Image 1: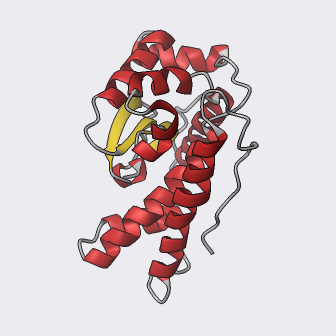
Image 2: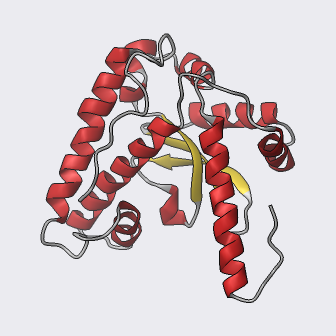
Length: 217
């Protein structure tokens, strides 16, 4: 069963940066509809007993209309479930360890934020902006259009921002820059770092199984 999870905080706890009304429509209407669509579309298909990630990757390899529809709705279901954890009512600064990892990739944490915002503002139409990690543990900022998920490109998501209008329009209208400025006031860096460390641990296990031993935290 494809799960529809509740928010990890109350709907008013991200105010004043995101309103209770926005979270109601975004989570209770949009996210729930993607999950409902996915459940209906996979009934009787080869995807029926797979995880969302497996559905996304396998359906992305096919070009028929049903598979494309499944991929879109499954991706949006996964993306939104991930998104809610990227935000928190009690934002804390990144740990020294993770800030150093960001610095190695982008020069400084401030540069990373600036590049992330630039990528988001440059997105034409609807989509997502992500901090991702490659199999070689390289960090990068990518933009995906529509509902595309980084997994179809072989990347592991660490952090994201939803740039579909339903994510911000009730609160910010067309002021995307203001939305992004405030988004980083509710960003959950503990969650981001946990994703990073989980991927490192996964790579260490894979390296040990293949006889390598060069991975380290």
